[in-house]
Amino acid sequence: MRILAVVQYDGTNFAGWQVQPNERTVEEEIEKVISRIFDTPVQIYGSGRTDAGVHALGQTFHFDAPKEVEDLNRLRYSFNALLPSDIHIVSLEVVKDNFHARFDVASKTYIYALSTGEYDVFNRHYATQFLRKLDVKAMKEAAELFIGKHCFKNFTSKEKDKNDFVRTIFDFHIDNVSNTIIFTISGTGFMKYMVRMIVGTLIEVGLNKLTIDDIKELLDSHIRTITPYKAPPEGLFLLGVEYAEGEKA
Amino acid sequence: MRILAVVQYDGTNFAGWQVQPNERTVEEEIEKVISRIFDTPVQIYGSGRTDAGVHALGQTFHFDAPKEVEDLNRLRYSFNALLPSDIHIVSLEVVKDNFHARFDVASKTYIYALSTGEYDVFNRHYATQFLRKLDVKAMKEAAELFIGKHCFKNFTSKEKDKNDFVRTIFDFHIDNVSNTIIFTISGTGFMKYMVRMIVGTLIEVGLNKLTIDDIKELLDSHIRTITPYKAPPEGLFLLGVEYAEGEKA
Image 1 (cartoon, each protein chain N blue to C red):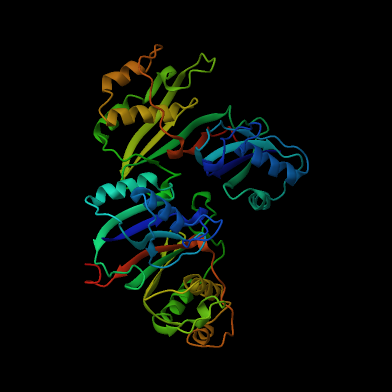
Image 2: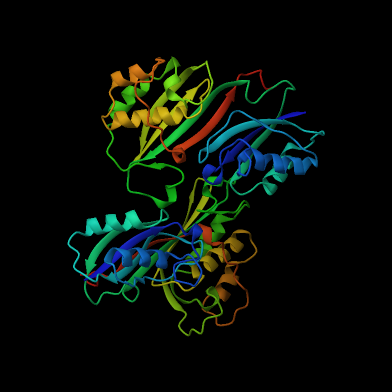
């Protein structure tokens, strides 16, 4: 019995999603609780990783329940009673036996919050506090360049031995909500640091340090001419993960 | 040169306002910074204390600058550069030499946030998560009883050797903002636990465990017939402190 979960977490006190020795991670906290509930080790499979300090409003993972679950609401209740206060299961649903939370992703949506108003102690972990004037019009114009199918080799960490850097961005828009600039980006998938590097690059555009032509040079190029600035993790939220109709059930 | 400051703080990681041995307190953190700026010990005088876990959007304090300050904006900038990330000075202004941040208070306003919707990890330190159905209409009716001049002996801690329990509540209203009940209360002053006990009592009314008559019995009575429930600190914010015109300058 395969179950898909939607989970919310405050990334502030986590070293990210993925299990790492001697670090507090979201994946490990969830696996501990679910293994305790079923009284046997249970592995979970996330839709992908999030970095240290990055939040999730709608991360997903699947797992195979070692025994029949009759009442999903009750299971969710037990889950939330045992989980630490910075992780919360939003929903659980039974999915097909061959569904995979990572491989079946149709699209993911991230938001990035950049506060340009007065410093706010209550928002310090949930928005990047950037108290400089930004040319939002130029940023919006530059954001449009990212939409579509592009090679994002210049917008991810260099460490990985990867060869597929092509991703499709379905939508990318920038809104101004009372002194906070909200970036909303959806796409087929996002590599390590990709959203933070895209946002960081747009901040440089907003500061008039990079031009539209600089962005054009960075995108779809295998030569890294400019190292994109990586925006801090606290402004980033994984908003949701979408699956194609028919994949789940 | 006496200076009045308005300060915002996230109370989550503080043992309250007042200096206490071996505890992290807001007062101590501010005094450390201001003493460092002026290179001599400087004491500050708050408008009153807040308890552990209680937040402030507009707490006030005054201090005497050991030397002339020419640029208040620059002082505020130095302050905020040195303060920890959970304290932020909102404003500074020069006041009369005999102004006192505590004794000259005309009124204080607190808000209390009670979330009755789905548990929200991002709000866990900034609203009390109370996932039970409440009769808000009954709570609003009961709240009106508190307005005016009353003896609040039953709405403060018992420990203190006090004899003046009379306070005037200028305004008290309850709003429903998307699954959050916001209590806003203004008055001449609030004793230890007073707002939390008033809110706690209204929660009991909302659960239909206390009636309007029970509240009438608790208010203005020197006999404690019912021990009011004390609402948790994380929902409480000191919104602002007001001074009479002419007191400051």
